[in-house]
Length: 319
Ligand SMILES: NC(=O)c1ccc[n+]([C@@H]2O[C@H](COP(=O)([O-])OP(=O)(O)OC[C@H]3O[C@@H](n4cnc5c(N)ncnc54)[C@H](OP(=O)(O)O)[C@@H]3O)[C@@H](O)[C@H]2O)c1
Image (cartoon, rainbow, N blue to C red; front, side, top):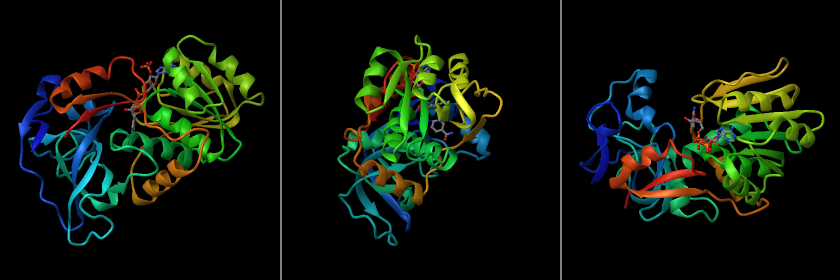
């Protein structure tokens, strides 16, 4: 199969288009024929060996990169009865011992595979998994967001952010979105946020105080820095703040406001809840915004594009 793999940890030059054997499907696995792979903000960290060092595992090279994707089921292991060949599915491949999603095929534990919910296309579903689960883990498990609470999503036009806006609306919260640029503001308005400001030029704290006069109940941050810290001054005392590990610099909160770092770890329960929320009617149909889909051969260009302004997610066309 065609894949983008590395023979050693390294910079952008380490990415190589390689022909590798299709992974063998184990008894509790699904072999996914991947059509779209997500390109995550954290993919350069994986390429440089960051996850291997953090989780202390010895990699096998060539190592196929990529943490999520979607496509069709090509084969299932003997103990898998939830899926059949031809089903349209999405799946998680971060730290997958049989290889990631920058490839035509991946063998994935069935627990980390799901049918595609709602009206999402395969192209949307492939760009969504890690960012969507990370948005849900933040809103649900970490913040315990409840209907009618006010929440600020900081970085709302990015990968996690634009999904968090839509999930928070489906939970029934009032959403104050801090987006990037005029295009980011437009996207968040379209997705149903109640109030949207541009975090690069507007007075976010003042707008947040108008939005929630008693102070914001909760905040999910997907970017850090002085603008984020200033925005947090609009939290109420006792307010809750969450941010996924990887957000740098880590947020500084005012006294009386608790910030918690977390990971977007997938499991069957969270995936099921995510699908249910996606299928819950919201202000507009649930959308995964894919800014650009690069051919697999252009994985280097895709990873370089992570450093520029874009909305939603980047993706690779793998088949
Ligand atoms: N621990 C985990 O499980 C986990 C899982 C997924 C992701 N993460 C981490 O979470 C972070 C976010 O991930 P992501 O996929 O959502 O990345 P992303 O798409 O880059 O989202 C961050 C967004 O914040 C925006 N932003 C930055 N400063 C802003 C400001 N002052 N005002 C408004 N918007 C601003 C960025 O836009 P501009 O670039 O245009 O400013 C970007 O759209 C990354 O660090 C990633 O590594 C962790």
